[in-house]
Length: 337
Ligand code: RET
Image (tube, rainbow, N blue to C red; front, side, top):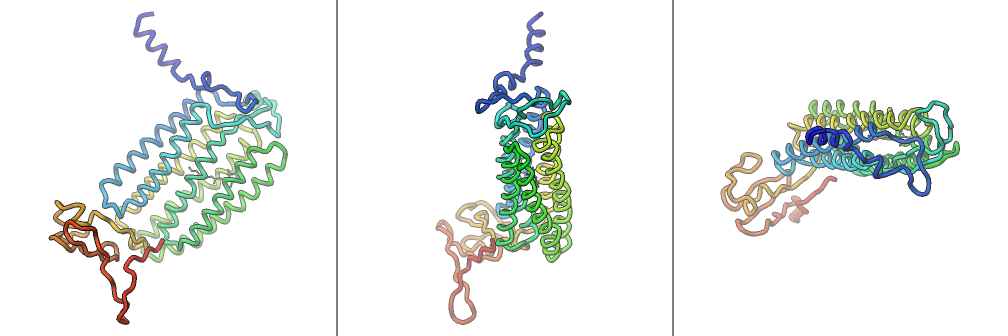
C-alpha cells in the first residue's frame, strides 16, 4: 500500500473511542452498549451543536447588547449539549446498569446496559434554560418561572434515579417525572401562552411556535426513556438516534426559531429591564448615535430601556434620581426579573 492508501486506511479507523474507553466502569462491564456507528453519530450531533452555538453567538454580536439575552441563553444550551455529546461519542459519561428485563433479541441481549448519566447532567443545565427562553418570551413573573424550573429539575432527577434503579421501583420515579412534565406543559400551554398574547401578535406568535414545538418534543422524551433506560427494548445505538434527533430539534432548531421570532421584539416590551453600556459615550466614544438612533453628543446619552442614565464624558455613569411626584426620590433601577 502506498502512503496515500495508508492514510486512507488510517482515516477509516480513526474513531478509536470504543477501544480506548472501554465498557468497564465502576467494576462492571456493559454488555449492551453502543457500537462505533453509535459513537460516530454522537460526534456528529456534537459537531452540529457546536456550529449552532457559534452561529447564535455570531448573530448575537451583531445586535445591541441589551437585545442579546435569547442568543446567549440558547448558545449556552447548545454549547452544553456539544460537550455532553462529545462525552457520549467518546464512550464516557455512562455507568453499566443491570437491566430489569432480559431480552432474547441479540441487539439488547445481556445483563448490564450502558446508561449515559451525562445526558441527565446536560438536561439538568439545559432544560431550565430552554424554559427560561420560553417563559421570558411570555413575560411570566419570576416566581412562576422559578417554580416551573423546580418542576423541571424534579423531572430530570427522578428520570436519572429511575435509570439507575434495576427493580420495578424505577417506574415509580418515572411516574413522578411524568407528573412534573405535565405540570410544566400546563404552564406553557395555558398560563404562558395566554400571557404572551398580551404583548401583541408578534410575541404571541413567537411563543406559540416555540412553545408548540417544545410541548410536542418533550412528550416524546419519556417514550424514549421507556424503551431505552426503562424497558431495554431498543439498542443503545437506536437510543443514540432517538435522543439525538429529539435533542437536535429541541435545541438548535428550537433556538433558531426562537431567535428569529425575537428579531423585532425589544426585551423592554416583555418587562425585561436591561441596561446597555453601548449607549454610554464613556465606553463607546466614537459612536454617532445610540441604539435608538439618538445622537450621542457629549455628556447625556439618553434613555436606556426605561432607565434614565445621565453620564458625563469620561466618567462613570451616574443614575439620575427620578421623582415619585411627592417630592421624594425613587430608585431608578427597577429590575423586573
Ligand atoms: C425523563 C424520564 C422521567 C420522566 C420524564 C422525562 C422527560 C424528560 C424530558 C427531557 C427533555 C430534554 C430536553 C433536552 C434538550 O435538548 C427524564 C426522560 C417526563 C422532557 C428538551
